[in-house]
Length: 183
Image (cartoon, rainbow, N blue to C red):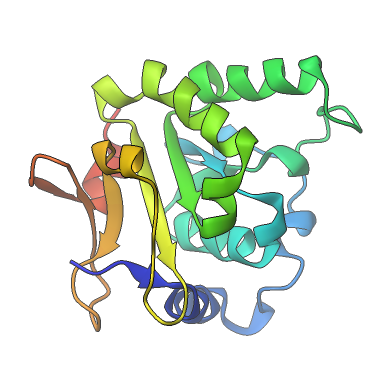
């Protein structure tokens, strides 16, 4: 199993995006349509990682999964408030089937992402509907935090593989397609 680097993830997304490219992909699809796929995920992320968010959206949508990105939701308030927090919590708990933390260094440092992980832990972890997608820097370094070790993570089978797995802390594995499509 191998944690992807940001560069590797960008290459994968670019290959999946094809000629349309990556830039502006999230903003082009500003409204989220859950009805277009069987499964939807809430993508927890740092807003400073916009390029990686676009890559993740392409990655998961190529697997037939709808991706909810909070800042692309037109119903969100213009500035953050308690209403923002309530809407995000609702999207995590009942609005989407799965929860994935796009675990970059920026996301790990974000108070919002840590809060979202806490919400997902309560409502998604026991039913195996929560995972991290750790992205290492291009040197292959991913620090994470100790508490993140208790969560399943999405990793590549081998460095040159196009297979992705959900690795559980108990050592068991499940293909990403099985995990994403399980209700």
